Image 1: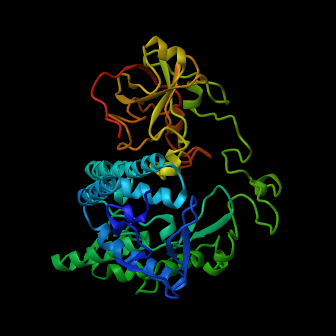
Image 2 (image 1 turned 180 degrees about the vertical axis):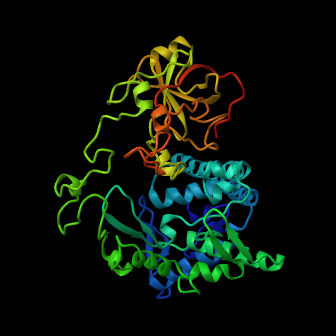
Image 3 (image 1 turned 30 degrees about the vertical axis):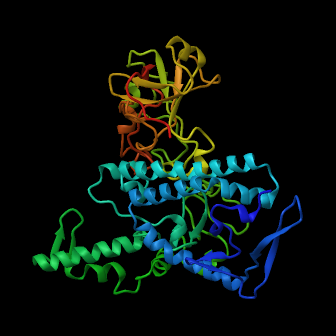
Length: 472
C-alpha cells in the first residue's frame, strides 16, 4: 500500500508554510490535521496561521514584486519552464499526495497534475510573444504607441486622484487610487510637472529662457516653468490641483474633494437650464420655459436653413439621403461602436476577452460566407480601392445579406495580420458640415465640425491564403 513513506522525494511532503523563502509554522504552534479519507489516518498538519503570518506573507510578496518585475520576459519564461519541468518530473509523488489527502483515484490525480502544469506552459510563450510585439503595450496598451517617438506610462483610473466629469450628466465624480501607480507610471499631473521641469532645465542650459507665442500673445519665462505650472508648489500634488480646478470653475466653486469622497456632487450651474436641488436636470428650460431667444439665426427652434450650400444639396429642411455607393464592391462595410471595451480601454482585458472570441473579427451572413468558400473562424481579406484588413470571420445568422460588420478600433497587436477597421474606410466629409459662422452653425471641437458620411463604404471579401498566426 502506498503512503507518505513511499514518496520518491520525501521533501515534497511538508507541514510548513512557505513565506519569504522560508518554511514556517504558525507562531502559536496551532495546526489543522489532514487525514486520509479512506483510512482515517492522520497524514500531517497544516499550520493554522493568523494575522501575523498573513502580514508577513503580504510583505514578503511585496518585496519580491520589484525584483521580479524587473526581470526580462525571456528570463521569467525560463523560470516558468523550469517550474513546469519540475512539476512533471515529480508527477507521481504529487499525484500520490493528492490521492492520500482527497481520496480520488491515482490516475485522476496524475491527470490533474499534468493539467495544472499545462497552465504554466501556456504562459511561457505568452510572455516572450508579448515582449516581442511592443514594449509600449505594457506602458499604455494603445496602438498609438507603435507610432510614437516617446511613450510616457500614465497611471490608470484606479491609481490616481482625479476629477471625472462629462457633459452627459450634471454630476462631478472623482477617482482615488486603490493601488499606487505601477512600475514607472505616473499620474497625468505629475507627468506634465516633470515635463515642465525638463523643459526648464533645457532652456536654462541652452540660454533660451524667454519665449513669446505670437498666436496667443503670451510671454513665457521658461526659467521658472515648473514654478508657474504648480503656482510655486501650491499645486504640487494631484489633490491640490484637483481642488484648485473645483475652486476656479463657476460650475463647481464651493465643492470640495471631501464632499466628492462621500458622494458625487452636482454642478452649481449648467448650460441650458437652472439646477434645482432634488429635481432631475431637463435641458433647454432657459429657452422653452424662461423664453430666452434660442441660440440660432432666428432665435427660435430652427430646422429650415437658408444657406446656399444647403439649397444646392436640397437639404434646407431635414431629408433622408441614401448611402453613397461610390465604391463598386458588392458588400456594405458596417463599423458599429465597440462592444467589449470603452473606446481603446480594456481592449485586451482578460475578463472582457472571455465575453467574445478574444480578438477582432468581422461578422458575415451565412450566404455571403458560403458564396466565397469561407467557414467560421477562417482568416479573410476585406478590401477595396482604399486598403485592406486581414481578420478572422464570425458567421452570424443575424447579419444582413449584402453587408458585413466589424466593431471599430481594434488594437493592432491583437490578432490582426494587417490593417484595421479603418483601413478600407475613405474620408468623405459631409459638405454641409463645412458651413460655419452662420447662426447656430458655429464650429466647436467635438460638437459641430466636419464629419464623415456614415455607412458609405463598400468592400469585397475573400479567403486569406497567406501565413497566419499559430494558435498557442
